[in-house]
Length: 261
Image: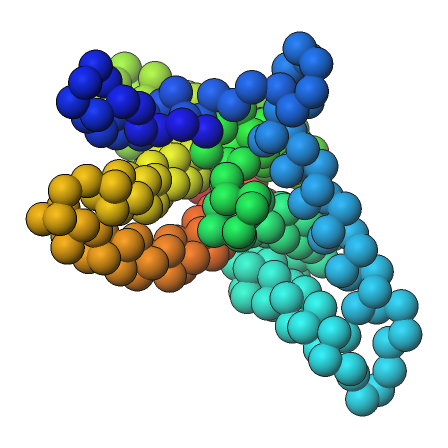
């Protein structure tokens, strides 16, 4: 990845841009061998290995690894599934748990040395996850209420004057079938994209200043320091975005199970 180039004889700094997110294939010319695809595959392996290892020799007095695995599972099960969805929560725990750990791992890749790329900064991955959530919460609602009653509930909110339906019905349809999946995916994508771009600006900018004249060399430590501080902030954002995506999914499922939205 080259986000700074020598331009002419001035050696100017070209700041990071969207081009830095379009990574070439690791080998060959296959679009399925790019770094984001490899990171997604790696995340599946790491999550699987971690939780298999954590539960393989489960004991009443847990080891540190077992305690870590159980803590993550309990957090998703109790705080994101049970408290949000209600008494029918247990059948949705596997999906919510998988969703949370998958997003969290791929987000954290953005600050892991040598990897340093959040896969969720490629919008196609959040889109796919949002589509899964979209299908699940609509399927749950249709199974519980039936297709026509569910559509009627969305389009004709009870207690609303009939002339208002002319404006309200299209808005409600757009909200349930377009806005929800789009906002769910774009929120995750935008935060990961912007965070990684800022890290590139300060780290690569500091490196460029370090190679400049003496005055610029004195400024470069401030850029590096800010970049390091931003890395810790980015870690909090990465965890928060995994939580928000999973929480909103649980809320949508809870709404699908409710008698009225």
